[in-house]
Length: 149
Image 1 (tube, helix red, strand yellow):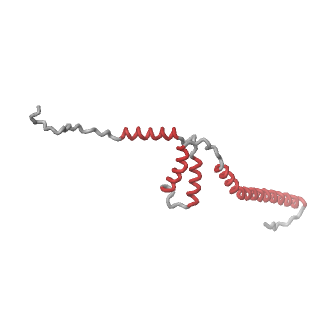
Image 2 (spheres, one colour):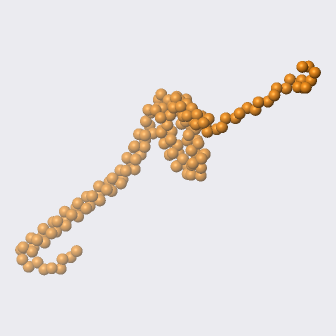
Image 3 (cartoon, helix red, strand yellow):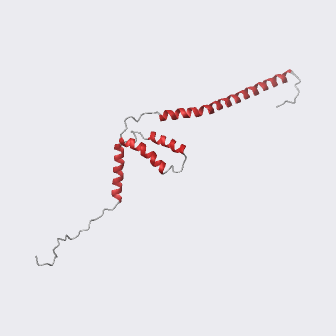
């Protein structure tokens, strides 16, 4: 911005100098904030990968049982065959890693698996009608109206 006003006295000169100092400070603050945002944008992928690697290398699942190990294999396989069918390999691999880490012994173990199976079987047995057996006469090969009576 060019100021086309003529400065005629010392007070106008001092006011113009003060105005230019304020503009300079404002622009410095603006560019400093831009620089900080740019640095954060550059660092964000690195922090994402750092957090992701920490998540993937976390070995809290040392004391897992057979149900947890089976779920870590079967649930990603089931996801890939049903919900993720036709999706990209990158998405499948990321979701497979996340699902494997999400299954830990605190959430998924054999006692909880058996409890869930028992609840489902109780629920199914309540819903399904019980079949009554037909009472049939036992045939011993002797006709009922025979002379053996």
